[in-house]
Length: 142
Image (cartoon, rainbow, N blue to C red):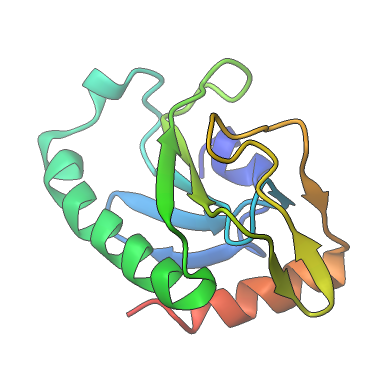
């Protein structure tokens, strides 16, 4: 695995693996259901991914949005490619909503709604909560 995938907690945060992509739970939840969509390639430039990865990305996005729509009933969704610290190709997937969502007694506001997501205002989960959320979310992927 590339270093970016490992940094986001693989294999403990793995929700679904595809041929060219991995969907991981984002341990620091910007909003409930925040994910990382990471290319399995060692590429550090989006243009360097194999053509097949771009084709498969359509299926991955459909799976992500289907899973999250049922899980957190987002109103909008943001895909942010922020490769400043973690160099391998990846997107932060941030479900957006106007009213806070709750999961297992924890409230997850969308601090930036209706503007840009506030990446600095995250809900830090314990390792047990990460495990529980990963298990619950992975069951929503088909």
